View 1 (spheres, rainbow, N blue to C red):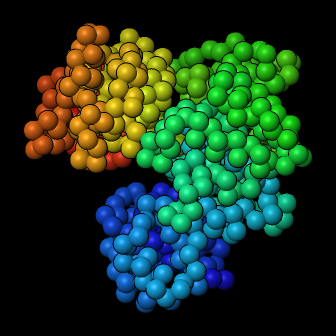
View 2: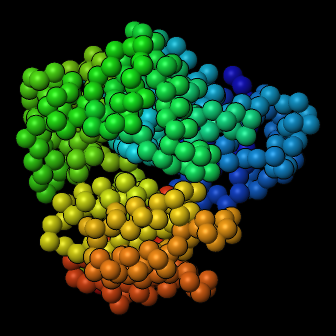
View 3: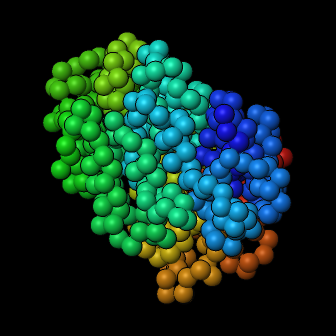
Length: 476
């Protein structure tokens, strides 16, 4: 077994992989700045020793066999500089996953701009329901497993399901992470422009997805969203069998007679035009139906029977921060949290919430935090994705100093355009002080009985969830 040091151990995937490797018998330690729950708690619960802050003395005292460098770590980091000066072996997190966790297992890689975490979680749970004891790496914490990563339970010929991120791997390896996961089965959920900090165009993103498709062996399987032209385009020159999943019947996998109830969604699972039977999943929104179709296709390819798929879907629990209900408060106010931050994801998430809570007013709180939404790339799309909300709260743009004024998201313009659509809009962070407490005060006066307040961010939103929870509890 090896001694492994993680620079940037606090990231969701990094911490999850660190814990999994520790359970396999490796000696694991690492460091990060501003470690906070849930990942700091997760590391503590699994007795992973880590340093708060970066210092040359940390890797020196650990004497690791190799150093895992998180993709947020760049030159100038004192621990990275120490490792380079002392000729330590550096590996990226995805390369480590390929070497230590995927190995010779059948590798199922879930890729796409949206839906990766949920689809990976469903696929892993369906394999579990089929008795295959899969290993997995999910960019979140799947509620069914209570961990983000684990090794395969099979000693040989097992399965490993990986959330395949298109983001780059490390400062020394600018390939998309999913290119290191050696896919036997690949899922392409959808392809859109994102990650403007590393991709200059949609064409560049398509190129990465084409490379992924080109890695699937001729004996493998590519499952592709048949309703998304970009996905079909990148799949067009696959050397393996290709199956399309779609909401229409002209596909290898589809859903018929979709019915939405108070607890979730029921539909008939169709395969090559024939009905396999009715399934129920405790989730909402057609985008989640598509996630189910993709995951079910991967599970069936692995030999999981329909009865096990029915059981697995019915018992599936959403990953954290995917339409997660934080609490129900006095006056029937529901507080929810979701990871959605891309305009497409925001739109479908709010639409799903509206179908889940008909006749209830939606208050959407959005933080422009990602490297794409903090710029004006999606200026028009952001004005169009809040249609299901009656009230929109805009958080402050994350680190606006990175961009020239003409490149930044224009929140004043966005507010005007949303107000022109009849929305009640509140723009926070304008004065630069008292943020995000000003949002709490606004909602204390604005929130009505039976409102659904949803937080949309790929970050912590300044701990707004905790502040609102306390505020709504005090109103009870």
